[in-house]
Length: 254
Image (cartoon, rainbow, N blue to C red; front, side, top):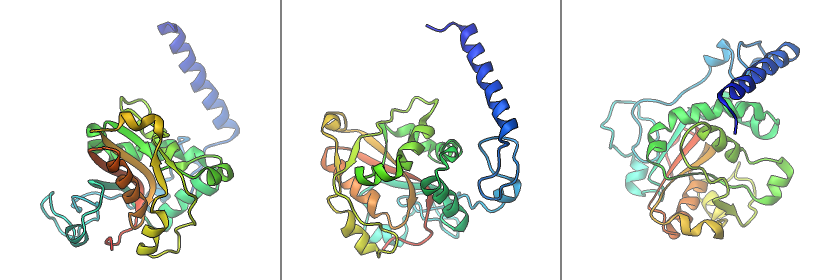
């Protein structure tokens, strides 16, 4: 068991190692390339390009409203066709800047962005985290995981709950069917594409009954993926499903 002095020494050594690494490889903004003060941040120029989502939004899907409305107001799409999840929220609007950040993480091996994005997720999901019994990422099929080497949603989940008491189960769900990329599919095609693609892992089925699950993913586009995950979770007895993503498309659900 570590003593207080050994823990302090370990922390001091870690800070010294970090400082030495910063001298050799000065931290740079992932977008502009400018030198920055901390290893996990963005430059002042890049900060001005971030479109954080705050203020009035749909109580269910999180679509921002242009005017101030009561907190329980639903958008027209959620009124007409309530999704299977209870609440969805996001940190950023999905635009050229946030897209570039996420592509750097997913396809550019910029896993060093995960701590920064994890902190942003933790802040944006504060209320959802307080009420969650389980935090879990949207899973990736093993074939895609083999090619990419990591699941960005699982990485974001791990950093989001780091240092907190929230219980994360990184393998709660599994993707049992490989699906084509959703990038250029319509909302209806996306829904069909992911139908039956997920399952609760057998070893966790006894843990989820009556629980509130918070799903984590990188982007909310039409909501098809998280809706299918929510459908499977509810089929297995989950009481409520919330969703948090780094970014979301600012279009109504269809």
